[in-house]
Length: 243
Image (cartoon, helix red, strand yellow):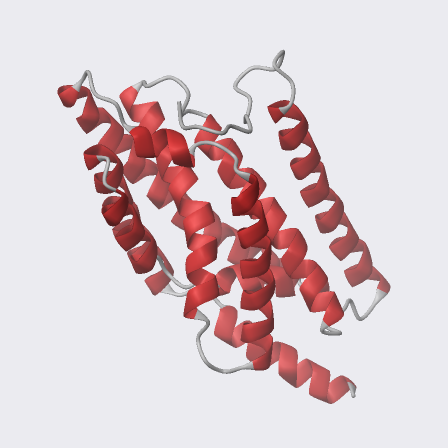
C-alpha cells in the first residue's frame, strides 16, 4: 500500500544517502589508481578498485529519478560528481609526475581509455545486480559495487593522467568512456527499479523519470556515434588492442 511503499523508499533513501566515506575512499582509490597508471601496474589498479567506495549513492540517484525527488536526486548526483572529480584530479597530478619519466609507454592507461563491448556487458549485469541486491537485502553489495567502480573510476583516472602527462589518446577519451559507462549503467539501473515495481507515483515523477531516461539515452547515442565516426574530434573508438 501507499504507507508501505513510502516506508520502503524512506529506508532505501537513508541507506543510499552519501556520507563522508564516499569522498575519503574515492580520494584513496584515485591515489592508488594513479600510482598504478604511473607504474603501469595492473595489480595496483585492481587494488585501487577494491578500495573504491560503495556505489550506494548511485542507487540513491536512481531512487531520486524514479520518485521525482529533485533535492535527493541532485544531492546524490553532486556527491557522485565530487567523488569522480577527486579521482580525476589525482590522475592529473600523477600525469604531471609521469613527465619526469618520459619517454615511457603506459599500456594500462590506453587499455582503460578505450571502449570495450565486454565491459558494457559486465557493467550492465553489475548495475542490475547492485540495484536488486540493494532493494532486496540489507547487506552491502560489495561485488557489484566493485564492477561499477571498475568501469567508472579506471577510465576517469586514465583521462586525468592523459591531461596531466600530455600523452595523446588519453584525454578526453577516458572521460568520454566514463560518461558513457555512467549513462549505460544508470539506464539499466532505472529499468531494474521499474521491474521491481518501484515506479513513479504521480505525473510529475513520471515526467522527471522520462526526462532523465531520455537524457541518458541521448548521451549514449551521441558518444557511441562519435566513436564510429572518424571525422569527429577526440572520438571514443572501439579497439581490439591498446595502441
